[in-house]
Length: 248
Image 1 (cartoon, one colour):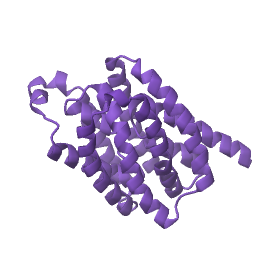
Image 2 (cartoon, rainbow, N blue to C red; image 1 turned 45 degrees about the horizontal axis):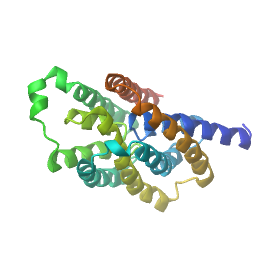
Image 3 (cartoon, rainbow, N blue to C red; image 1 turned 30 degrees about the horizontal axis):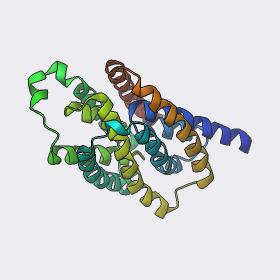
Image 4 (tube, rainbow, N blue to C red; image 1 turned 60 degrees about the vertical axis):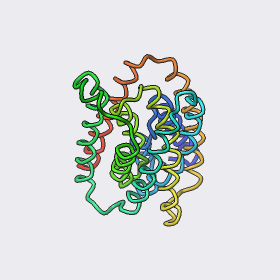
């Protein structure tokens, strides 16, 4: 593969993952990391590049979704999310990929159940309040698990926020603003270790900015039920992709 072709491929990865980020409020790492790895980047570098890109794509998405952002809930998420993200980045590699993959699958299934909790258990759903303690602890736990595999928690934030009572559009918007901060906190660790490949990171970031803007605009025009369904399918698909890669 020539350098030109590889950089074009990296831009394409950025556009695709950025689109999904803006559309569904995810950080994009669950897509971006395996695609970057397939494009030729070492896995640890793919983790670092992913964290480098997220603040750019999430900032564009958050700006587009700005009217739906819930500042108070975002603050709670940032507190817990940063703690979990730093812890996950420091612990990256400490557990086997397979063990971490199965943990991730279990959490993913629970968060998808949470999306439809208002239908499955309406009384329980009505009693869940998005307070500081449950939001910040939930964010810390999710980011600890995803941070150990080079993510920012963004793939699980929207379903988590939906489970605690936010409208799906508000969950997407709030997740996007939060992943800027959680990714930056983990990025510091990767920069300090020299795991960031700058030119590939800039190529992916350029594509992600374009994709995120397009995805965000489309998301605002999409009905809640379709966003919920798309997010559910994507989260489960990502989780089993993680297991598949761990088994290889």
